[in-house]
Length: 70
Image (cartoon, rainbow, N blue to C red; front, side, top):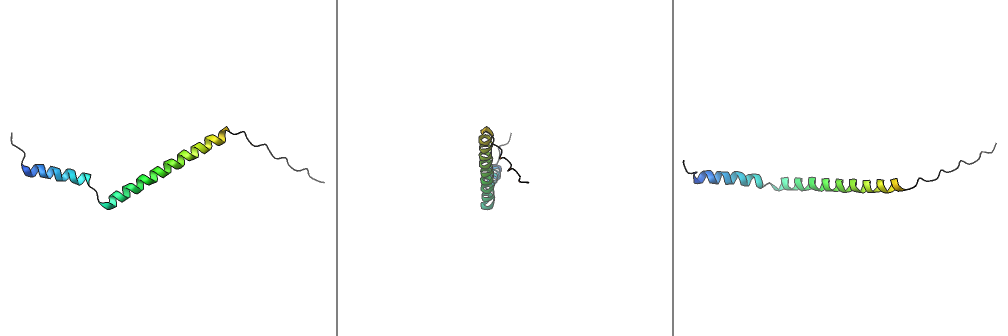
């Protein structure tokens, strides 16, 4: 069995580091997508709450049609 060389270890470390570190543009894009998903989720939760609240309400009484004068 041969010992892994120091260069192999450094190459593996560099590859791992490249996977973890991203550019600023990628980080901003990721944050923007995360914020968009969060706001969409909050909007959906709010819409569901409004729907449930309105579903529990009694329906409004119908307005009578005015009598026609003939």
